[in-house]
Amino acid sequence: MTTQVTATANAPRSSSFLRIAIALQTLTLFLEAVSAGLLLTSSYGETLHSVGARVMYGASMLYVLAAVLAWRPGGGSPRPVRHASGFLVLASVQVVLGIAHVPSVHLPLGVLMFGLSVLALSRRNL
Image 1 (cartoon, rainbow, N blue to C red):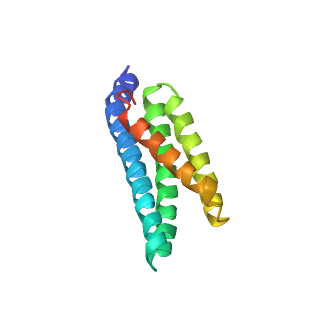
Image 2: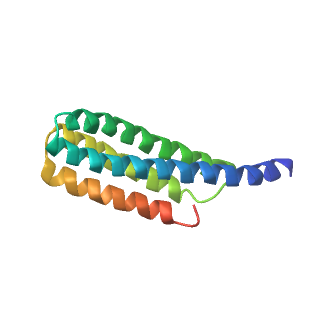
């Protein structure tokens, strides 16, 4: 019985961590869009976009970790883990497309990822 009470007490903290991870991911995706604009207009834009890509990928991995931690203690639905894992796959594809210089797919995928991240952030029941 003590274990169940502890798991229930940790659930709000895990949910908060998950929400923070999604917010960080959303912010990094927005900053990637800003740095993409700078990429087109300034000499340092490529460096910012490259560094931002690494930070965005790290934020996606943090999202997966937060989703797993939110799922395990409370024994809730594994749906957030599937969403976070799918997002990490999209982030991986995005990085590959960026390195390969395929803007015709890289840009729309970035917009899609930002929209999905905002949607995940707006969900009330994480």
